[in-house]
Image 1 (cartoon, rainbow, N blue to C red):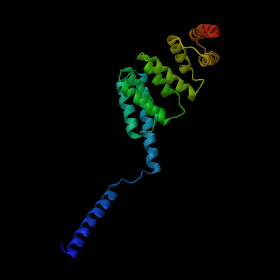
Image 2 (image 1 turned 180 degrees about the vertical axis):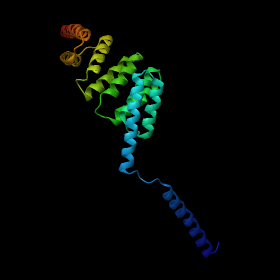
Image 3 (image 1 turned 135 degrees about the vertical axis):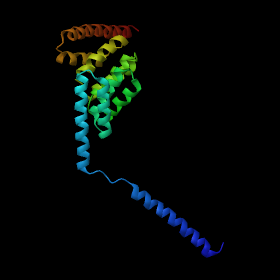
Image 4 (image 1 turned 120 degrees about the vertical axis):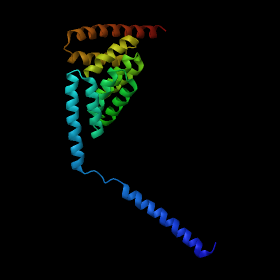
Length: 207
């Protein structure tokens, strides 16, 4: 191939590459404006409120549709993911529910509720180690979150693995609990755990 032929080929290829890049650049969507994002959030929030009203009315399927529409409108709304996860759990779509709870947890890193719901999911399936882990994670976000304090005490009773952390959580729960059934439950658990811990200490000293 003669030198000017090679040069022509190189220039032609370069033109294709640059043309392709320019075309790709032209096809890129324009960034969303703050006004557009605000409108998406408003629409998603409205859809969440509609879904919550449908839940109250017992129309779970219709509520799920609304929560999914909310997520499609604005993906980063944690309440939509968390509530969708609860409804998915009710219909035993467990993997999808777990994914929804995890997404809600990532989007709202200080909220204990999605992690508590993960604990509830695993507890309902009989995986108590996993349930305890997620309740523990929820309590790391809010050590006084009563729903997780209740459930982790129940789980630790079944696992029969009391420790000083569990006793501290029982005390925290009893400071805010108002339900007589749970107050009685915590008192019994406290006595039982203290006996088990004292017994374990005595056994270790005798050996």
